[in-house]
Amino acid sequence: MKRIVYREWQLAPQRYWGLLAILAAVAGLGGLAFAYMEHEGHWVTGMTNHVVWGTPHIFAVFLIVAASGALNVASIASVFGKTLYKPLARLSGLLAVALLMGGLLVLVLDLGRPERLIVAMTHYNFRSIFAWNIFLYTGFMVIVIGYLWTMAERKGNVYTKQVGFVAFVWRLLLTTGTGSIFGFLVARQAYDTAVLAPLFIAMSFAFGLAIFMLVVMFAYTQDGRPLGNALLLRLRNLLAVFVGGVLLILLAYLLTKLYGARHYDLVSFYLLSGGSYTLAFWLGWILIGSLAPLGIFAHPVLGQDRTWLAAAAGMVIVGGFAAMYVLIIGGQAFPMPLFPGQTVVESGFLDGQVAPYAPSIPEVLLGLGGVAVALLITAVGVRVLQFLPESLDDRVVDPHLAAAAEPA
Image (cartoon, rainbow, N blue to C red; front, side, top):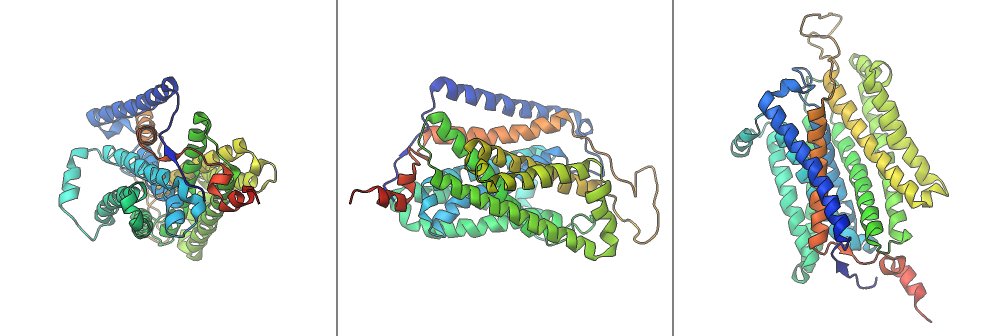
């Protein structure tokens, strides 16, 4: 591999500041939405005593699991020794930290009493997965920042592989912990299974890599930097494997639920009779988020076209939000079995009935604000520090092509 030269993002000042202004405006709307919900109370949202994790949690969990997956490229380069991915390892680490910060910001601001976060940080109940996640999230951020230092500082290069291995293991633990938040909730039929942990790991790989591909393609196209096909097509193939992995583990999840007769109603709710949740499952998660991207990746012409590749990565992200809607909101909306068996429970508290939920504008704005903060951190990072190689031409990143180009 030829020597990689890193340069700050050189987007024209007018366009760069315009981009920052748009992201800052969206983040500001998220802040105003938080202030409104904090002042008026959570009754202005779509959340109820049945659905206590609303749309902001969809954004927060999506960003957190995507943060783990965004580190894929750096892990493949340093831990598994695939030098083709090494030029983008720095951007991979930056995007991972940015996405995690955006997700945690939404999560904290959606608590209702965010000032009480200090209690969660000073008083620990280690029988609770939430207490574990305090350490998993903060530890991930510290480790990845150290990882970035080993890649950027010549004196730290000798530690890159070791720190990268720690970051790789830690991000698997982080995503396992996030999935276990739901898997450990035995009262909810849709949760209460260890299969959710590997499902969240697979989803993190797919969602994070899809975001990473879009960021790379946008940054290099807008800055006019060379971006060859060698790395891009490798990322395409990798994303296809991850999307297929999500479908495989999803099938295992559904079959696990079907194995017990008491879960037949739940599976029927997801697949047939769940209304908006069934629509989000089949149209959003399966068709748009999985089958359509896989079809594009496998197509001999569309799979080589960058516009279609960007569209497919965007579809994976849309499918990711649909998946979080189905799992998080749908899992809460499905009635809890207060009295297992043939007992029918009816009351004014909607016991035994599907809980209603409709996202409110403040919830959506808060979630979008977290996305904007993540992208804002990324945009500032690549502008002021050297995260991006000045060229990703095939001859630069692929040693075989570089050798073939040398005169005999």
